[in-house]
Image (cartoon, rainbow, N blue to C red; front, side):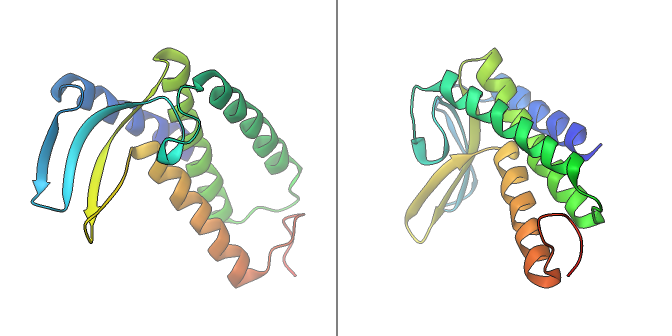
Length: 151
């Protein structure tokens, strides 16, 4: 359910951005800090593998397959892991939809932090990062092993 909700929010946000902000237009939200800028990203984070949309889509599909297979094999799964995996899967699917239907990913959150222009990202990227961060925290705090059982 979390993955489905994440995909819906991600795709809705991208629909709103593409229909309200022109390509490459930048809208200031907080002066010198936070902007909305509609861009088309044909690569991954930080522009890695630019113009390799098909390869990135295939990598996403393979990763989804292995992640879902891993989850299904877990003997026990905590609530935090369920939420984490849901966020990650929702984020992967959100960007995968863009790659398959548009040929690029719609990105729009733009930040300048200490004069550094942070790479522009979207809701799907947030879902993936937050999900991964929660998994790391859970692992560090609980010591989950690969079977999903507590140590």
